[in-house]
Length: 118
Picture 1 (cartoon, one colour):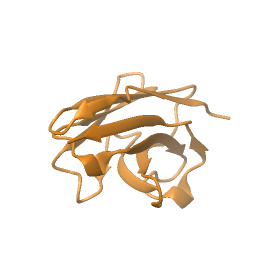
Picture 2 (cartoon, rainbow, N blue to C red; picture 1 turned 45 degrees about the vertical axis):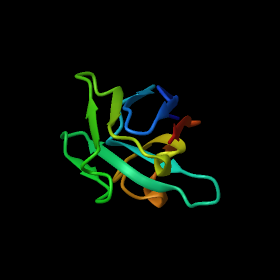
Picture 3 (cartoon, rainbow, N blue to C red; picture 1 turned 90 degrees about the vertical axis):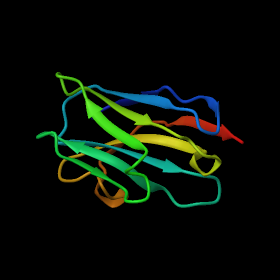
Picture 4 (cartoon, rainbow, N blue to C red; picture 1 turned 180 degrees about the vertical axis):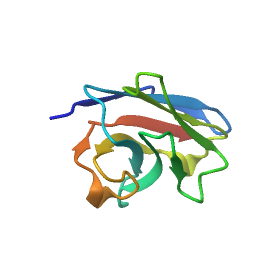
């Protein structure tokens, strides 16, 4: 069992930035960030694998950056120019094959809330 803990969620004004952190209890093949807004399906934001290969959802790739520390147990999501549509619960997730789709995820964190006001 891998435990994931997110932090860094906050309430910000439109145009602001946030950095989310995800700490994992063990190294996994990949870690991804997902988000879910009220009434909407959970969607992928970004992922990073053991080799450092990153993947971004096309609509967000110009505003987000995913990275990991040298121990590969903490993954960061830098989000810039936040807009009201970015308001959601952001989840950290880990998997053994890919972290770009919800159905491939083995472990989920509890989520951290990001609220953007205009």
